[in-house]
Image 1: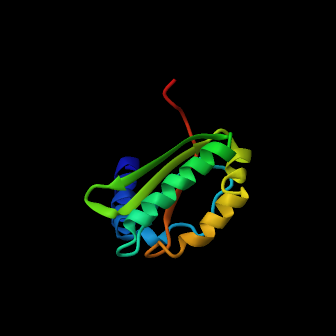
Image 2: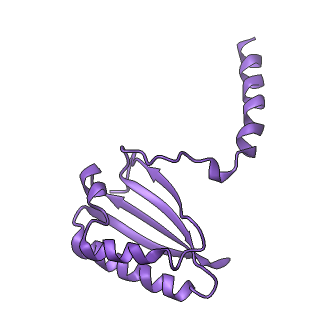
Length: 131
């Protein structure tokens, strides 16, 4: 009987989960994460500028954020206007320090000129990493 009830609950839940749009993510950023995946769409004609922006930001992070473990910049081959950044930090303090240099703040102020809309971000807590 328990199995039937559990199966029924799963069957009722799955359609609503599938129908939930990606925009229904929590508005508040969690405080207990050490990694993030952020997707940005460039405005039409701004893809190369956005690429240059993120390459420069990657250098700034490497220079001014010792708590950054990695900062990978990727582009979607199927849609070259979409950039994805995967970043990981050693701890919550390193996350809090992210983007706080004067240069990073000035750069982020210009990012709106390049984006076609708000970024999509997922905040993650590391469970395990390849040694």
